Image 1 (cartoon, rainbow, N blue to C red):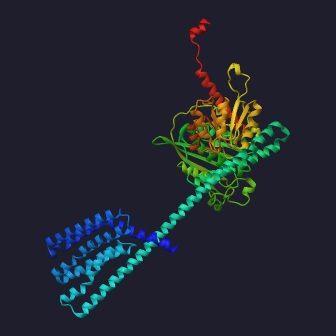
Image 2 (image 1 turned 90 degrees about the horizontal axis):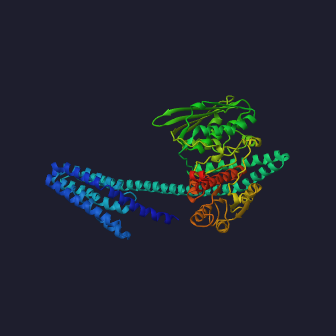
Image 3 (image 1 turned 30 degrees about the vertical axis):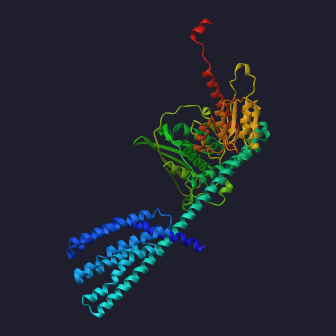
Length: 639
């Protein structure tokens, strides 16, 4: 193992040193020019200029050799010519010391004795981790420096002076070599530490990616049984009024499971850097009103008072991510309801126009709960930390709501802060800037796929997705308004024909859940377990609506829809409703691009399916009406 690790380090050392030297060419030429200028009074301008030209030529040759050697496949063809060129350059630079001794005498020798150590130090620094390059750059100045005692003897120096000079030269050479070794070992350790850090980072990224993929897969699969639980509970509740208390317990447990799962998946996506926010035009007032309507029931059911301040100051048309803003507000409202036993919950809203074109917004949720200690405040936004023992058992939840809310607020460019003291409740403040938006179409909630229960999500793919709110405190069953049963607008000759639906899903539980919900409406339902079978069914039977699961083996829902749209079969224009647990904006956009008309999020619930069916049937009726030629005025008069 040690040998395996050392080979890349040696090769890397040569590569690093040669590349570093190539980058220092301009610095060496500038140093040579300055040196020639300094020695001109001693040697004369002709000799100084001649030496500078020779050194410049040597540097040019070295640059050309380095350039050609970098392309040579054989290591020997790279190293030998490079070392020879560097040796010539170093010998040319250090060779200036000879005329300095001969023409400058003892003072010239003193100047040479200062110049050569500087060259040696420069060579030591510029040849890290490569002994071969060090030898090529250090040998010429070292030999010139070792000649100092001989020049000293030539100019009549005494034996003691010569011995002292010789010892000083040898000691400096040893010092230079040892210093290079220390620098090289340090650089080697630094490189190894950097490589190890990169390896650990890549390993951590791979582990995180695998962890994220695992959670996404598990989350997708868990939504199937949760959806079946909620669907079965809804049917039991509708069928037998005496068992509503038991079925409400099942429903609340299913909603709690879904809330925990959603929080876990959001936390994983944020940690992996895969959470993105949208910037779309939306009606801020309408979004706030919908959120407050959702929480008014649970707050009143607990005997609390809901107070709203500053709603009139809110702008209407803004740009941002309504799904994530709603999610943050729902988490804060859920937290307030959870920990407030008596008193009131206050939502304070403030807005200020801010240049160039937008609004500075402030949302504050205040409660009259028990408050938090300073130690609890420090842990408040830690993931999975509920700040006190027994909170999870008493109130439920995962301890992720506030952490996710803070991360989402920061992703949107805002800030979430908290203030609290024991016995004084808690205040959570969201500060956010939203640009001014264009006026959006004012439509009824039903037309946007809004459902009365927090566990349902169904919306047109062309509209921004609306996140299911926090479900720690689910709305009571009595709060659910009746859902209008959808009816198709068939031609007169087919008025008595039941709706023909195709349900495509690789899980039998999901197919059975849709059948359980829609068969009481008199729908004729055909099922398929994958995309291939679905295309076969579509080639044989004309359907009114197709419910298509997105994640399926072999042929997924998007590709199945693309093939359906590309063909000329009887269902090429049949509306397709995407059914999936993947509700990120990019997933919805991919469904829309594939030709899907509507989006329903798992787990499936009756309100979500009813809203989806109503929407696509209304759209189909409008399209049919627009395509039917209207009689002219003359025809009516003639009649």
